[in-house]
Length: 286
Picture (cartoon, rainbow, N blue to C red):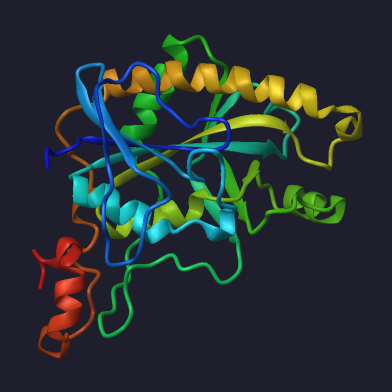
């Protein structure tokens, strides 16, 4: 299996990646079950990439049904070192306008019961997650936004809610009082698992609408939201191509050694079956 450099995870509205050359589909097995769909690998801007539709092609999985562990493990198995994750979000700020992009630097978890770690079952690891995105990937995305003339906001917090229903007005106003910036349903688990897998990760958040806190929210029609989503997708595709082209080939960040000091379990106490299951992630340490 040829090694893939960069993984691209597409969310609502982004189910494929135009411009891919030498395209091939790969079904990847994992110890955590099946990923959302086949990985569509190929060459983009001279780089080896793999695209995965987060919700499956045809959007068949709710956020709560996504097998995040399988998705990220599959990327690791392909050799991916960096992930660009695209996500449709609602805005919790007046100045984060529909049609613009956000590059959040933080996440806040409001999900319930989702599994967001590869560890447990006899092997304990605690990664550092104070800074959950890779600055190198964010730099490439920010430069790509500028080159593509797409308005964007670097920094801020992505609040990850459970869904699939959207917020109540009361919830939306509380999130604003907490100084959250955008709201979505998927990216926190991806970011945590990517860090455990020692993969660089960053989010390109497509602002589709103001969340329900906004006075004009009820006047927005579904047709308007879809129109904004379609424009966002077109812009996101431009940004992805430009960011892949600009991405440094060598990694100098700390993402690639996130587990170096994270594993607490006595190596002698780790069962052979657990070592085998997680060998792809921890083999160089245990």
